[in-house]
Amino acid sequence: MIKMLKNIIKFLIIGFFILISNEAAARSIQISNKLIETIEISDIEYVSACKITTILQGKIWQIEDKWIALVPADSSAQGAVPKKGWEIIFTVNSDTVIVNNRVVASPFPIQIMNNEVLVPVFILGEVFALPQPKVPIVESIVLSQIKDTTILSIKVDTTVLYETEVLSSLEYRIYLQALSEIKEVKPKGIVKHVVLGSKSGTLVALFFERPCDHRTIKTLDGLLVKCYARPQKKISTIVLDPGHGGIDPGAIGKKGLREKIPNLTVAFSLKRKLESIGLKVLLTRSDDRYVSLSDRVQFARLSNADLFVSIHCNAAVRDLSKRGLETYFLSEAKTDWERAVAARENAAIELEVNDTNPITNNDLSLILSDLAQSEFLLESQQLAATIQDAAVRAVRMPNRGVMQANFYVLRGNFMPAVLLECGYISNPAEEKLLAKRDYLEKIANGVFLGIKKYITEFEKKYGEK
Ligand SMILES: [Zn+2]
Image 1 (cartoon, rainbow, N blue to C red):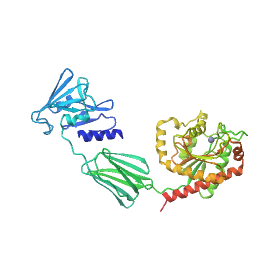
Image 2 (tube, protein in one colour):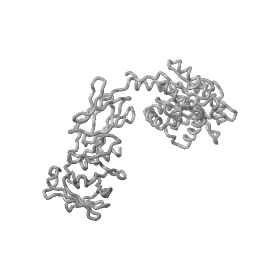
Image 3 (cartoon, helix red, strand yellow):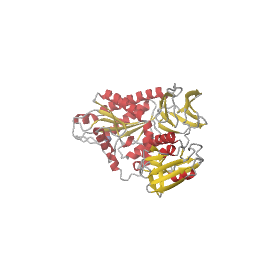
Image 4 (cartoon, protein in one colour):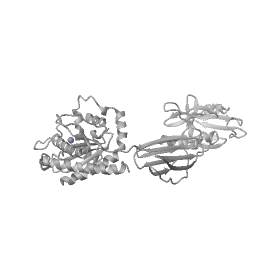
């Protein structure tokens, strides 16, 4: 974004098109139909004054730390240079340039490199008095609806440079290198809100009523953005993930209850309930076996599930009186407490010595999964809230709330995903409860009601109207 603004400023001030053919290629500017490569020195773009002078059919020479350029009146600068010619004095390391006895201030000093004077691209227009191009002006921004497609048309009085950014399936941004005085765009179709910004250039942010795909087409006088609602979504498959198992017992209570056991019991019971209302339910483990965290994530992804619910029990190291339920959704852990819980539940990664599927070690897939997950962040938060609410109600235990933490099993799942801590195995009274089948049944029932409520709300929002 910074780079984009930098470009716009340059574009507006000096009025050359900065030609960017691709990321790897050097940048260049165009003067009198000739391209000159620019040189970047500590993030500032410079260009050789000698090369420009030559293109403008002038002369340049050096006297001590000064470089003096004379550009003739009949140069190809299209009449911008006065009759008598143009005398420009560059002083090395100085932040001013003398142009026909007038001082032009430069935000960055003049540099010398390989016996060439380098001038910041920022001040070229003023120093060489090159003609200013027209700044594109946005004439109109209108939304219209043709059949199932909502179309945003942006009209500009000339061709326009732009960049786009997809923030989520619900938000799309277009940055135009053009100025606009338009204050408001009326929503239409799937676009429920349009936000306009006008800091150096024009920002058009589209907010969609529901997840949307779009195609942006450049036209001769602007842009067309076609927005299509994604196919109707339905929740039909749920992955339940009973935490720990096998050699990994999870948290262990004072009386010896191992977390992996109630986790599985709750999952079984919840599975039966969900299946009774026609949902397909898959378990990451259905017996007392060790399943690596990355295999759990992979399983959920390959199953093409619509929801992912990981089931755990919590433990407090010092405060044994701590009790109650909490539900987490993915994010960077926010408080020390959330961080501590995440660290404990993630510790199972250390058991994965022979892991053949180390998604964690691949930076790119992590970044990609982060992106994918962010689309479901809001939904995950809502799922966590409805599950937490219903589960607490079912067992009448303290409500420790919905929290955010960076759990491995929640990462990389391309669906709304939450992690439920059913209670504190470290609290002797709660350990007793968590060992009872009917208590776990109550928890499962609460979670079931929460998921059911979430599905009803979800389908109201995304389903057929
Ligand atoms: Zn656990």
